[in-house]
Length: 462
Image (cartoon, rainbow, N blue to C red; front, side):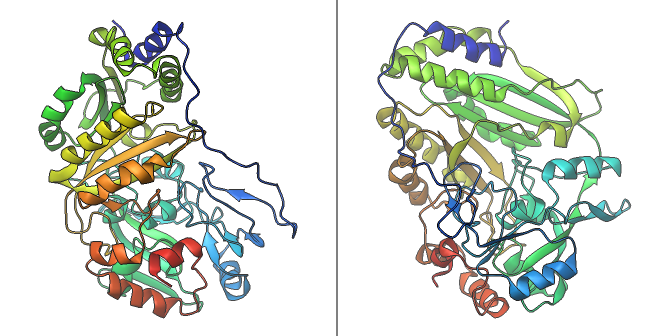
């Protein structure tokens, strides 16, 4: 039997004797560490965005945070973990880190509530909740983000009956630019709650969240390689009968990797060392050796596909749902009406496999339950199927805008707020029914635009 990781290594090794013409690389200038004013370089995780902030601050408490927002150079942008692929964190003013606003504040195990500071990383949060007998209802497949960064951008996991992270926020505490602390919930400062829950850090500084969790229990993980045609045919049944279901299509192979998670009473079976990034590099090798011949690339991949095994693990959900992401990439993800997901995905696959032989990163498909808590939720009032397309960080990724985005827009997609897109306010007015109301609330809370950088000017039309 050959498991998935062995399978990927074998496919690369099989094509090792064949050479590839040069892949399409992006021209990335080497940026100076400091600018002419002596300000140090900041870059996001993928390297797609950079800035030279005048000031970097990491306040220790609420009083220091109030001093920052009263006098710091603008725009003031919370940086989180820098995992947004677009420019929402860039600033030539003040780069604000909430790393010192981390940890569990209090909890209620009768209602499975936990109040958590906004700068807590998702990986830390999983352990904090485990210690009090709780678990997150759903988490994304990357766990390095801060809680505030993930919620403010509509970050999500996968689950037909599970909302994104913000869909389980009972309340949050907001520090306005006027220095006022306010609690926002469905019953208190209600309109601000709806407008700023997924607010891109543009309404004030969120300092803590109260989350609705569930009892701590074991989760069973199963990862299986399937022919793409089978995966697509079974997809509606898979996402309706499993708690968490997603799949990754591996370009030019005809193969999809199905990932399922369900609650279980079984004993722990350790996941083992995460080697997904090694597998990605194996896929890169396969691309490098045989991308000049898509048919050969597919044949090489299928030589060993029939003998793959299923990966299996049992542990707490927060340990299984997320994976390491040590290989950098650029990403575009759109959230489409669920019934449009597969048609759009087929178009995306076709355009990549006919025009971009250099693409090797898997294309990810997930489902997310609709919600009505956040007016700027990409899942607002509709169950959603997401499609995420990735490009290796050293490769040209303009094709995401030129080839992929038009397809996702055509099918009614809303972009992930933390990922690449080219949309402007004129698009968002059409995509979000409460857009003008949200914009008015934002203007009231930040009349001088202290939180608005160039990227957000494009979003808000200011």
